[in-house]
Image (tube, rainbow, N blue to C red; front, top):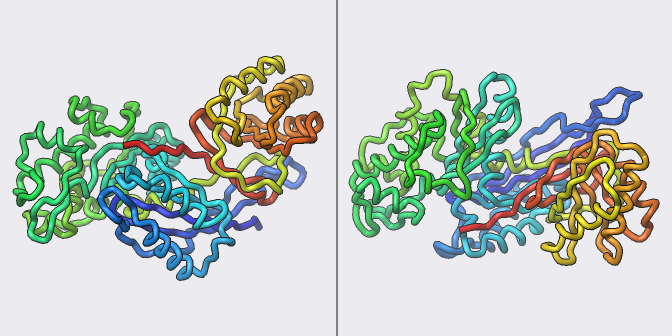
Length: 468
């Protein structure tokens, strides 16, 4: 029997806001006389909130107080107190992440929702969470060819490619169901700046304040569908189409299967036909029509088109159930300083015979950007270092923290954190020490470390990105 922890996932999207609670079981999977090997053995969603329209004060500002009310009401309905939450993530996605107060809202709500509810933003992370939440990650374990999941929301399409259960590519596009909005009479009230060049290139008569013609809207959503098809088949996009990528393009990883999640997916996997402007106006946006165009493009793919486990709830399921990892079992930590949140990663090279002076110099040179706050020193390290190699690493790390009152936090990819942590502590009794392993991070990542569960610690690795 394992230990259970309660996790929350909160997704504040372009169109909708949702909350889920999950029970995560952590269990020792090693035999009785072996080194403990703690794993997440079960994840069960125990509560799903209603689906709310994301509250806004204006086109550029999120309504923080209204979001707080939504979260409080759902915690109450679920019978959950914030003190019961052990882990989880609150993520701002799509066009909402571009609002003026998005970063402030995320920071306040992460503390409001629980002591170890992490703040997360960025299209790549959203893509990965949605891909896990949709079931694409699990389904790829049983297939020889990879699966690409397109999670299509109101403002963006977040894409992740999975192979053998692992993410091999993630990217995002400015394609979504609410990039054009209408009033009750069918007049256009909003066109996203992100798609204006595409509309111009297609020579479509779509203007704010005017009634849209169905053929122009269908031409646009058909073009969106064709772009997704080109990506799936690794066909070249033109320069205007490439402008729809957010931050970076895809890597061209081949996939044998395709899956859709997000709110628009509700119309991709339905039988609803959109034959005119009145059908399109159902939600006063182009979401239903976009889903219909994608269905028409991919309906003859047969077994290549997979059905997701979750559609509109994929991202929030991913945030609540797949954002947390478990550290290795042979680690060293001081529980009185946990949890720790938003620790920037300083990744350094580390060979088996690095001299302490070289290690110290590397830490100093790479940590300047983070002023005097907490940071985590990260490296892969050798697979089975000897005592003298570990001693050199410890000397270099301790020297780098001389004069600092911050705890020494070390993240190792390979499995020797306990030996290194104890060696650091023997050399330096002044600093608190956390040394964990079996966690892979990169420069630019941030890490959150929760309180211990059965001798291991829950870890969330994230990238906080707020870009226009």
